[in-house]
Length: 311
Image 1 (spheres, rainbow, N blue to C red):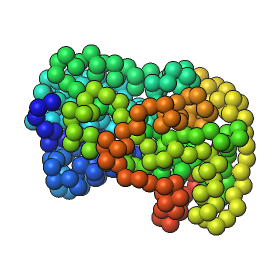
Image 2: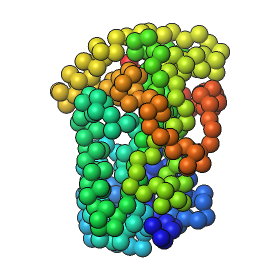
Image 3: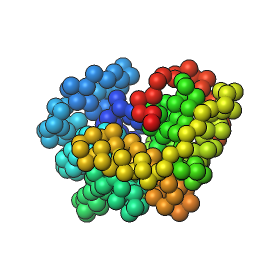
Image 4: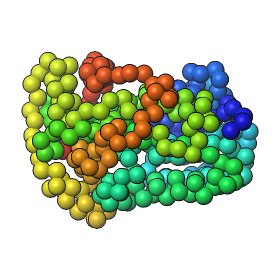
């Protein structure tokens, strides 16, 4: 790519990951940042950033207007809206956008065993990247990020098995299998830095992580940070997988939480992608972080509430 990426528009900026991506780009004077938000969104954004409002079904005419003059579109939209990304991609091509970042963030969807466990979610993500590959001929490049679980969210929400207020943990099997995970701030920085070196990040998956840890290591870190002995309950991972699949079959999406934990915490499902894939941390100039430092920050923040998904 001969021309630099300067004008960036972010979709899903009010979600879990979006604010960290916005912050990373907004803090770098190289970029001019704007936001695409649905008319129904109640999210608030930095007052100095331009916000383009669009209908909830992302009408093409409104997308074309918002994408006018943009060099890159960053999608951090949630799972429920991810099917709309193909229409957004088509509009980006028509508007002359050069780079698209799909909402791929999370588990390693290139792992066939992981896809087999949670096909309802991962096949959609894979389909979006395959669609982007088809559109390379039209001049649109792409960059997808594999990040593992969002670490802070996984801890505070309880979906990775840690109940911070009650000092309890639910551990799958023996708890020693390693999994890669990334903090919000590092993900935002990775996306931003990838746009600074477009030639080196075009049409590729970027595998990043803040650290690779086991369930037991996370538990030990929380015990260290809180100065308390936690109550740990070990459960059979295969049984939890069965329960998760049963819930999904009945339309209960909470079953996906158990399956995401299974994919990350049971070896062989791509959770420990740092062991098998080229890591992009150095290429993207990402900071070195330690588990103890990040866990200590979570505990010190005081932002600890009864988790939504602890089981």
